[in-house]
Image: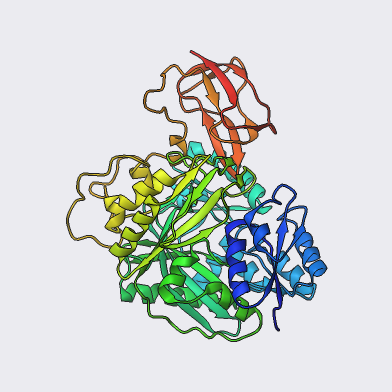
Amino acid sequence: MEIRKLLVANRGEIAVRVFRTARELGIATVAVAAPDDRDTLHVRTADQTVEIRSYLDSEEHIRAAKETGADAIHPGYGFLSENPDFAEAIEAAGLIFVGPSAEALRAGGNKLEAKQMARRAGVPVVREGSPEELGYPLVIKAAAGGGGRGMRIVREPTELDGGLEAARREAKAAFGDDTLFCEHYVERPRHVEIQLLADGQGNVVALGERECSIQRRHQKVLEESPSPALDPDLRAGMSEAAVAFAQAIGYRSAGTAEFMLDGRDFWFLELNGRIQVEHPVTELVTGVDLVREQLRIAAGEPLAVGEPKLDGHAVEVRLYAEDPRSFLPQAGRIERLSLPRTIRVDAGVEEGDEVGVAYDPMIAKLIAHGPTRDEAFLRLQDALADTDVGGLTTNLPFLRWLVRHPAVRAGRTNTAFLEENPPLSAPPARLPSGPWDGAWRLNLSPPPPHAPPDVDNAAHAERPGAAAEQSTLTAPMPGTVIQVLATPGDRVKVRQTLLVLEAMKMETPIVSPYAAVVRKVHVAEGDRVAGGAVLVELEE
């Protein structure tokens, strides 16, 4: 099956990335654009563009492919990329889906069912069950998706009902499915994932691992390959587990098996049936173009990649339009954009483009490669120093702080790193010394007496120099009011949630900074608000 023209059912950075490899292969490209997304880089990059109603409308993508004579559809990541009904509809229309089969997506896409299949295949998984069976802390997860959406950590019974309600809303908005499940919460693990390629004929290869422990809002901000926590034996064990699960569900195309790691113990989390945001670090250390291999496999060619020898080290960070301390999304026009030329940059925007609130606020991915881990980080550090963005708030100061942090440079991080090291805070004068294993953490001895601070809650903390008698609460970013929990005259406690904003399909609670009486509520459920808009007035 030859692919002569390819439609990418996505936007932004990943669409531009797929177009680049297609162009190298002599494949014509088709972009799709929603009505509010027509003047964008991915539209300017493609050979043809078709306007569609929504990126989440599967029939619109198929219509666009038929109109332009495209042979195949690449879903990118996010949106419909792991939707088995979309994959099925594409193939029913006589087109090629560049991804797994609908059956494999169904088998691996539901997290709860995937855990059960992994257990049968002999792959270790975290225990799931009812809150009564698990005890606390536990984590609520959306069965139909990932990326931190529909996910809530619950540390005590009084938090359970609110966590379930918020997770259900978020999962429904992000995936169209509000099915949830609970599992035991592992404190401060590492997050390590194995890159897979499979041809659907039983041939599966693992292309090494990526360390993805540094996260905000359960989403990754820095990824590297290989992981500083793995030795050859541990890498082999995790790779064998990933391959076993892929074979159990008859997987094809590129995919990623995600694991939690604590010392030498690891547990399967999920299989992401798509290309990952962080795939470039694997490409740089293996020399394998994962998009090219996806296209080859989709065209019916057998797997041509063997187990690679990893070459050097690669590290990636994601440049976002977001507050560098709270990670709340920002919007605005990019008036100035200077990206480095010394490393790989996968950008989704250009100077003059608008970053809105309807889509992911990623500007670019910066990926450095070097013969050693230290050299890769030094190259990324220099590249970030040469990066300049004007016109809107970005996380560039945070990224510069992050790649210089001594714990990051030492490879001694876990998923709680940003909770234990608040963004832009002063790093420790020196790191403790001693015999550390792969699950090293800054405060393991003795264990912390209480949970680390929550990064989302930090979004509402008082800034240095702010007046203690804050009388108005404003929107920290543009968004939609999805829940109002306060009325005038209510007496509220410190940190009590007054309303909930939604942006980028993620929820942000707006909380009272002190015990007060609600004087006035300026918004209603369903209102769209601009960043800085007054939401609630308080009085002591």
